[in-house]
Image 1 (spheres, helix red, strand yellow):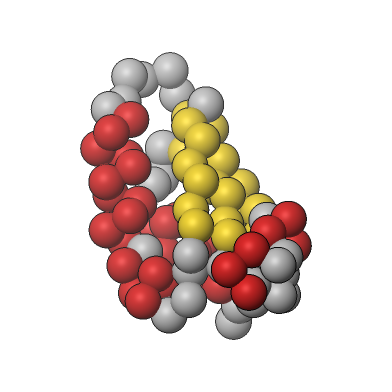
Image 2: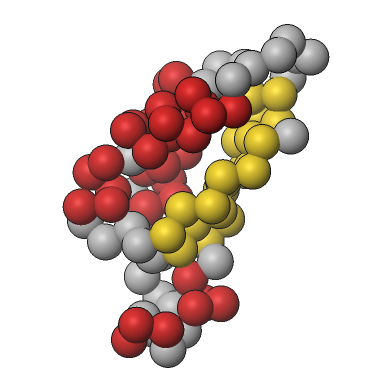
Length: 84
């Protein structure tokens, strides 16, 4: 299972009110800090709310960063989170 699949699995369990899109942007950072662009080090997550219920964006960011602690320990370098 690759990093995108692991992240999808982890977040899908906790973020039921959102549609998830996970994008590997690692190739855009090739050469930065000796990154090859092949290792799923730069990930963008786009969350789209299913309902129009208000949510605390800061708490969602904190939750995601907490859920992905092990991914950061194993090579995830950058995480961009967009909430629609």
